[in-house]
Length: 106
Image (cartoon, rainbow, N blue to C red; front, side, top):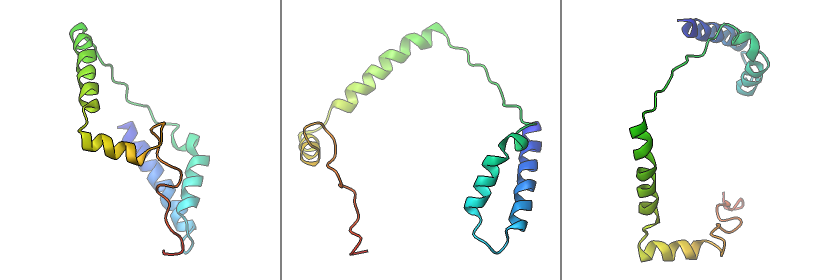
């Protein structure tokens, strides 16, 4: 319930800022205000603590399942491998500017 009260407090304070800044572009202003007043806004907030019990059996099965996943990711078809090689350089990185947009055409 304290998190709901904290949420309501934050919303009411933000609404006050919205009313104070009506008629202006305020998105950045609101985020900056929230960052500056974070301690005041979150002073009554108590984070929810949840404990997770890990059993020995789940620890034993977890590494084997991740190993299986890694093997599946490495199994690419020849066409996928060829496409990967054609797109990337010798280090496996995409070339510089591969996702650039032509400014003149836009």
